[in-house]
Image (cartoon, rainbow, N blue to C red; front, side, top):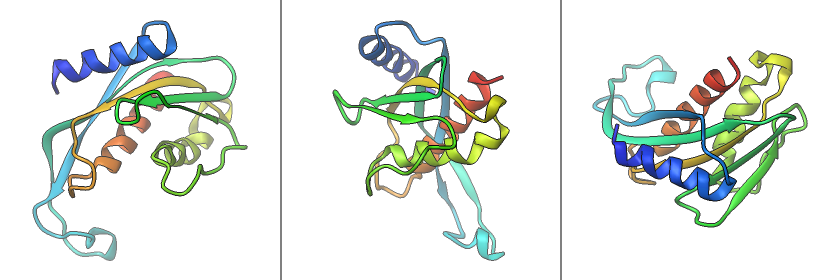
Amino acid sequence: MSAELILRSKELFARVFQEPANVIVCAPGRVNLIGEHTDYNEGFAMPFCIGKYTVIAARRRTGATCRITSAGVPGAISTFPGDSSLSPGPEGDWTNYVRGVVFGMLPMLPGGSCAFDAAVVSDVPLGSGLSSSASLEVATATLLEVATA
């Protein structure tokens, strides 16, 4: 993973949330050498990681509110509940990937809820078949594991 991505995520976090992040997580992009969309149909797939990453700088919060920003959407902060009242955002909203992971992991989290501030920086190209959405989802799941441990 690039030290530049880590630095950019920390800087974005500090600029937006006015305090330093204390958790850094990442996940790589990936491609399927063979087997596009066959693994869930009992076919063969051979995915492998690439040298592009999604990095999330974050800090746990009290309560049950999640706030997230992205270098890819300058100036925007999305807020959503980190408890059972969580619902999808508008259609096409990039935070739905994060919301879906949070919702799916709620039963496994202490107290069935979470709260965090997070800043996302990625060099995985969007819409290029390199699994940028999966990279964001895996980084989010890793964040929840680390921040709620």
